[in-house]
Image (cartoon, rainbow, N blue to C red; front, top):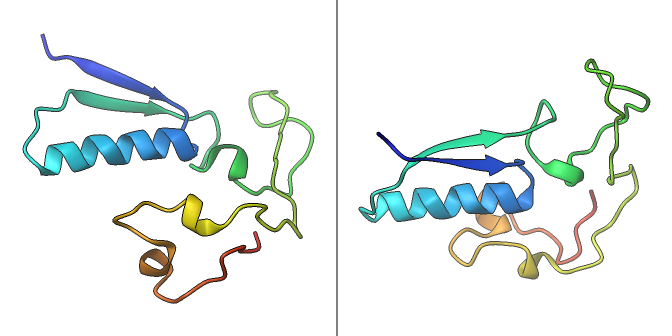
Amino acid sequence: MNSRVAIIGAGPCGMAQLRAFQSARDKGAAIPELVCFEKQQDWGGMWNYTWRTGLDENGEPVHGSMYRYLWSNGPKECLEFADYTFEEHFGRPIASYPPR
């Protein structure tokens, strides 16, 4: 029987865990089958911006912690991976306190 691991949520923590498993797999570690469950249609968790309000297609309340003019209250340097920076991801330098 193959072992499987469920990651609940594709927010920052779930995505970081998936990345850690992938990094270990890339280094030759035996990694179980991974399944990530996310309630929303897109990854990002509570940081997934949506203008929608009310109920989703399943009758669940739509909640978003992001809003149009939100700025980060912590520097990006505390949030990025040591081996994969925001600058690397976006292909250009960005401010330490980026807007939404």
